[in-house]
Amino acid sequence: MDLYQTDPEFMERFAHFAWGEVVNEENQQLPEKPRYLAILAALIGCGGVDAYCETLPKALEGGMAPEAIKELVYQAVAYLGYGRVLPFLNGTNKLFSAKGIGLPLPGQAATTLENRLEEGAKAQAEIFGAPMKEAWKNGHINRWLAANCFGDYYTRRGLSLAEREMITFCFLMAQGGCEPQLIAHVRGNRQLGNDRAFLIRVVSQCLPYIGYPRSLNALACIDRASSE
Image (tube, rainbow, N blue to C red; front, side, top):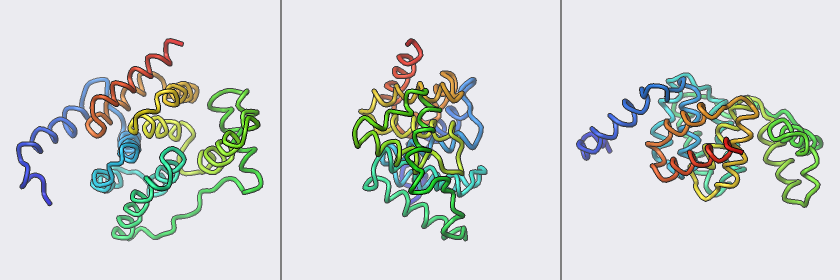
């Protein structure tokens, strides 16, 4: 259904704000790829499957590679769970098929089932510091975190480590209730070169899609991490 036909007054203001004012705000702009990467991650984080499917063709037209989009969706499973991410994976596959993008895409795995724990711990250490190389020894959940979240997803090709940390920030920001983890990943983003100004631009570009409360919470987490 065309919202410009059913809800013209709403769409006049939403389109002006989200696709005009926000995109063009001075000192808050992002290049096309990171902007769409952040928005799609935020839409997955807040459960906005219809808005995600609406935005996905624009992301492809804006130059995002299908591989980058798939990597975004795969990594979301570690932060939102299979139950919440499956509709986004199905929606992505449906759109790719409609556009003639052959599936499956070329493989991007960079680890094996034998070395995923070791490589995942290395990725954690690169993001959060050397002590993380041993963090997996602190119980089975931490071992899973290193092997699965980082070894299975963060090590994959298709997105850089800095891009992966940025989308994790967006997953956590958009779902809410994850402030301790969000603060930790602000630090991780900084370690990889995604500084305070960049993260504020990310929040700004995602705000129309996740609302003011979660955006303001994210800004507070950025400030808290920056003051430490």
